[in-house]
Length: 336
Image 1 (spheres, helix red, strand yellow):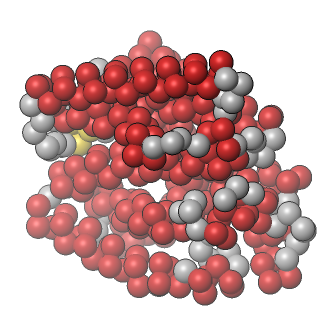
Image 2 (tube, one colour):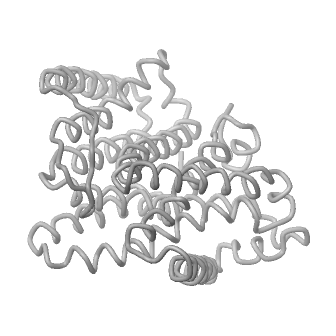
C-alpha cells in the first residue's frame, strides 16, 4: 500500500501538493515575491532535483558502468544539438522546446509514480489499461492544449512560440476530460462500495488531477502556473530518489558504493540533501557560470546552458526510471 510509510507517503502525496498550491496563492496575492520564490525553487529544488538524477548514474562504479552511455557521450550530443538550435533559430526555440518537454516530463514522472502506487496494491489494477492511461493523461493533455490555445507569448519572461490549437479542440478535449474523470470517480465509488478501493493510489490520483488542473488551467499567467507544478515536480522527484536509494541500500553501507550508500541511510537524510546541494552549487554556480563568463557571456546563453542540463536530465530519466523493469520493481517492492 505505502511506498515507504504512512508518514513519508503523507508528505509525498499531500504535503508537497499543499506547499505548491500555497506558493501559488502567495504569488497571486504578492506578485513581487515571484522572483525570490523562483530563485528558491531553482537552487533548492530545481537544480537539486537534476543532481538527484546523477545519484543513479555516477555515485558508484556499478551504476556508472551500467549507464556509461548516458554519462559520457550523451551530454555532448545534447549540448551540440541545443547550441545548434540556439544559434540557428534564437532563444525562442529553446524556450518553446522546454515549455512542451517539461510538460511531458512532469506528466511521465507522475505516471511512473502512479504505477509505483498501483504496483503496491492489487486493488489499484484496472481491467482496461488503455482506459487507465486515457484517464490519467486527460487533465495534462487538456492543460497543454489550453496553454497552446492561450498563446501567452512570454514564458518566464522570454519569448514563447506555441503550437496553434483552435478553441474548438480545447472545447472537445474539455468534454472528453470531464467524462473520463467522472468515469474514474464512479469506478472509485464502485470499488469503495465493494470494499476493494485502493486508498493510497486513489489519493495520489486526486493530487495528480489537482496539480495539473491548477498548474495548467487555473492560473491565467502561464509562468505562475508553471512555478506551482515545477515546485511539486521537483520536490516529488527529490523525495522519490531518496526513498529509492534508501531501499536500494537498506542492508547498510555497500563497500562497492560506499559514498552513496552511506549518505542514503534513513537516519542521514540531512547529509544526503546537503551532499546533493553542495554538488548543485559546484556544478551550476561554478562550472556553468565559469563557462558562461569565459566563452559565451550573456543571459540568453546562460539559459541555454541550463537547458542543456535539463534536456539531458529528461532523456536520462526516461531510461533509468521505467517501473516495468525488474530491478526497479524489486527495489521498490512492487507486485508483479
